[in-house]
Image (tube, rainbow, N blue to C red):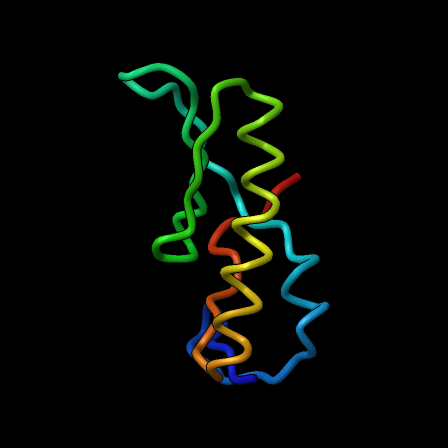
Length: 85
């Protein structure tokens, strides 16, 4: 798997490496009720839920599926753009 890091260098890592990266989550309430969670570093990686707990659970699954699909398709996987403390 090829990955562009913040310096646009290409790296290769196993899938488990990406699954454990600390991507920042954007979490907000939906205008129609419930919540939405998104990883802006992974285009299209978002989910929703009626409660915060459900949204976080759905988010973990969405992140995993996004990364597994990109990895299987040999797509570039962006590294987190911000360090999370």
